Every structure is written in structure tokens, then in C-alpha cells.
Image (cartoon, rainbow, N blue to C red; front, side, top):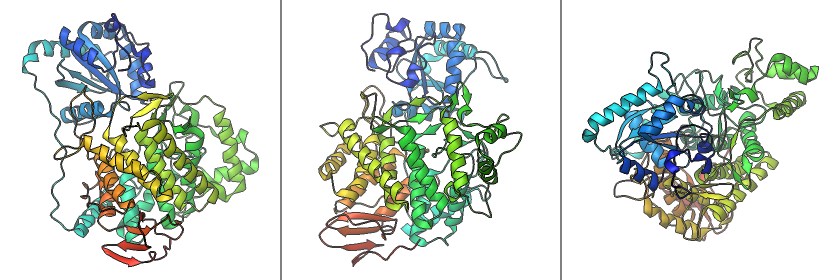
Length: 624
């Protein structure tokens, strides 16, 4: 992708030349890995070799496992090198390729995941896909070498029968119900899907439902805390901040929990999770003024500043593993905790945190708080507890730390920037609000300077100052949306907002949006499902219309999204169909006292509009 091929390129592993930390982590494999580029694809066509397109990312645990066993196995590597053209793809660098391969995997197996190993004919016709496979047969499943030999035999016998697999353009049925009826349907679907005991979406694994929560918070801001959606929303927020998803010492949140009770997480920390959870907890703080919600939000701001911020932008992720052991950095024994803390600190800590003698994860303790009469205890409420947390964090920082992927991805930084600006508007802690506001505006300026070209193209990201290739809808849309939030603060970059809105046209098709503008791959329709961050389609439709809103221009109503799968689209619909306040003024107004579901628009006089009715002056004072 970044380098011209050497004469012997296809007889060696070339990933030592890659910018991607994920690709470089496979540089020592005996597999002759290549990067995705025109030269590699041409070589596959000329030699009639099957493409193995193996997709993953740097903080993926099972990607590391497969790199260490199957892709390091001499027999597997030899067979791959002889009969295949193996290509490694970082899903965070090429989301279009990842989306296409994942769509095929899910369609053919019923499930998805990473590492995603797809096998294609040289002319890009996929015919088999799988996730992890061990080098030898295990748990009744064939070994990787056996799978490779079967794939080769199938291709040799059936290659003339292979058909192209086009991606279906995601569509939403035309709305036949009124806005209020659609809202009622979405509300009911979320209530029905919420786990009534533990919060979150019902299921045996618990992912934070970022976009569903954000939609619910906007609805609660509109209708009040007595509405049916409110109870499950608060339960989810409280469970996530209390249980094992939360990093109680540093702040921030892990990726998901492997159990229904939110006890044990997969210990990755992803930037998009921090961004969306900050947005949610900051918004929730404006609604309820719950100290636990505000503490969670301020903890994410601290986590971003202390562990994600690098050279002016935010890194992509922290690995789940330390020294090849998942969660090792974060785990404790009771004896360790007792040795670090004074008796007073230990008493306060034990009263607040569950410290089972036998541990809760491989014989050690992953921290989670005790609820007290249905209330989440806060760290700042007790000097002894705050001192205990600080002492334990100091010890934890002295341990080996997980690998940090220092890619700065535009879309994820933009989402974090939006959340930081929202936190600056809503947090009661003046110092934390100021820190969030300043970091948000700093990210805006750095992204404009480094990730937006003179021709108003938004690049995908950068590593160590080197731009990443690729032009993707998600980056353009997230950047434009971020600029609209910044415009409410200082009315800056209005011309750029207009230019980026125009540049989005390159991703438009007749019926939908296209995920990428890349010549080296098939055109992939942009996804409409939030999983777990907002879908590119929802980001695009929200950004384009919100750009008009903040500049006081006419805008079009956005269609509501698919219940439980497209709530960010529905957040955009609420904005454009009158379910938020629009407040017009010639200069930005202080956020104090404005309802949290407010958009500031540019105009000559102060007035506000809500549900199709406009009135002079400001909206009614918000009462949390």
C-alpha cells in the first residue's frame, strides 16, 4: 500500500515495511504476507492463486493467538506460500474491505468475529470465510492445514463455477407511520430488549449499547424521567459504572463483558468506546446530576488525557493483553491490596469494592464496586477511599502496561471531540468541564491541520505523523459532525463546514451512501447498523443536516432508524424533526440553563423552536 514492490516481494513477508502496528505484529511469521495493493492483486491473477485475506486489528486477542500458532506453524506457512497469496489487512485502516468480508462471513456462517480469514478467487470472488483455527485439529474442528488443503482442492475443481458476491445495498423501509408512532415503536423495542436485572441489551455477553443509550437520553430529556425508557437507561448506566466494564482506578471503560452480570471484561480499551460513553455519561449528568455519572464522565476525560493523548491526537486502542496474559495489568489479590494501603484506606476500599478471597478472574480480583441501597458509591465522597484508589493506581502504573496502538483515526478522534465538547457543557465540576472543552477544541484544530487536505478531503488517519491512505465516508461524516459541535462554541470554520458538506457528495449514490472512494476495491455500500459506534450512513445524514442547522440554513428531516440497530440515525431524526430545541442567536450563548437537547443556530435575533413552534427568547429553564 505504501511501498513499491521489490522483485522478490512475493517470496517473503513484507510486513516489516508496514505502518500498521497490527500488520507489523505479523512480520515475523514464516507466511509470505503481503499488503493489499494493486501489485499484489495483479500477481494473484497472473499466477491464478487463491487470495487469503486475513483481517484483524492490533488489540484483537485471537488475532495474536492465530499469529503465534497457525501463522507461525512451518507446515501451514509452507502450504500457504506455495498455493496462496496471503494478504494481511488492518480493519481499522481498511474498513471497506473489513465490512465486505464480514458481510460474507456472517452470510455464510451466521456469525462474525476476528481474525476474519476470507478466501477469494484472484478476481475477488469470495467462496469461504472463517475466524480462528488452530494449526492442529482441536475440539472436534479441523486444523488450519487441513482447511487449507480442502480449500485448494475445492478451488481447483470448482473455480469455473464461482460467482461474484455483490453486497446488498442496505435499505430502510419507507415510513408509513407518523413520527410519534415511530418513536413509540423504537421506545418499546428498547424497553423490551433491555435486561431488567442487569441492564444493557439482554444476552450472555454485554456490550455497552452506546447509540441506544444516546437515543434514550434524548427521549428522556424531551419527556422526562417518568417515561418507561428511563428506568432501563439508568439501570444500564449504573451497572456499567459499578461493575467490571469500568476501570475504577484510572477511569475509562473496557470493550465489553463476557458475562450477563458485567463482571469480567475483555480488557481492550478502544477510543470509540471512550468517546461514546463520555457522550452518554456527560448527557446523563445534565439530566439527573447523579455524582456517579459525573465521576464516570470526568474519569473518561482523565483517561483520554493521560493514556490516549499522543502528539496532539488520541490513539486508537490499548491491548487486552500484557505479557500475553489478558488483563494482567489490572488484576489484584487481597494481599496485594492490603500491603499497599493503610488500615484506614483498606477499610474504606473494602467497604466500597468487592474483594472475594478466591478472586473472580483466574484466581485474582478484577475490581467492581458494591451498590449501597441502589446508589453507586463515588470515589470522591471519601478522602480515605480517594487516597486508596490513588495509591493502587500508582502501583498499577509501575507494572508492565498493555501495548498501545498509536494510530490516530479521524472518525474516532472526531467522536471523542464531540463527547468532550458535550462534557464541557454539562459537567458541574468546573475544572473537569474546562479540561474537556479545551481538549475538544484542541482536537478540532489538530484534525483540521493534519487530517484535512487543502482540497477538503479528510484522510483516514495517521501514524507517527505519516498519513494513512484511504478516503472513507465515516471520516468525512464524523469530521463534519464534529465541526458542527465546535461551531456552536465559537462560530469558527464555517467555510470548512460548507466545503466538507459539499465533499460528501463523492460518497453518494442514487439510493444510499458508499463506504469508501477507493479504486483498488469494490464499491461497498455504507452500513446502516450501529455496531458499536454510529453507522457511517447515520453519521453522514446527521452531519449534513446538522451542518445546515448550526448555520441557520434550511435542512431536511432524517428518517428514523431501525429499532435496536439504528438508534444513532434516530438521534438524527429527533434533531431534524423538531424533538430538540433549536436556539437562534447572533453569537454563541452560555450553555448554563439551556436544555441538554439543544442545538445553537446562527441568526439575527434570539428565539427558540421546538416541535414546530418558534417563540422569542430562550427556552424554559432546564431542571435536572
